[in-house]
Image 1: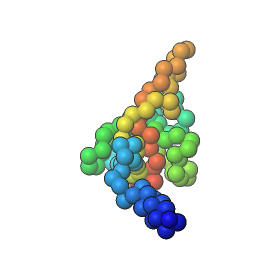
Image 2: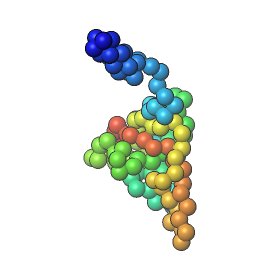
Image 3: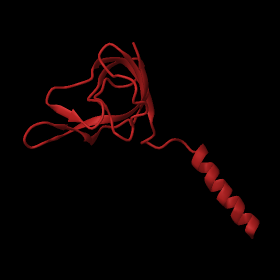
Length: 117
C-alpha cells in the first residue's frame, strides 16, 4: 500500500512538470524600446514601456514591478533592445495616473532580462 501511495505522489509531481503550461504562464518578448515613460502616469518600477516588437509579442504597455525587476543595473530608455518575459494578459495595479484621483493603468507585467544598445 505504501508503494502505491508513493507512486501516486510521484506521478502527481511528474504531471505538474510535464502538463501543458497554464494561461498565466510567462511568454517571451523582445524588441526596440520606443518609450519608457508616459507623462501623467507613474509606475512602481520601470514603465509604462512600449516597444517595436520582434516576433509575435504585443507593442505594450509593459511595466516592471518591484518584485519582477531581474537586473537593477541596466537602463530602459528609447532606442535600446530589450528582452524578457511577460504575463500574456494586462493587469492593473503597478501603474497609476498622477491625477488627483489616481486611476490604475493596465499593463503587461514583465521580467526584463536585460537591454543592449
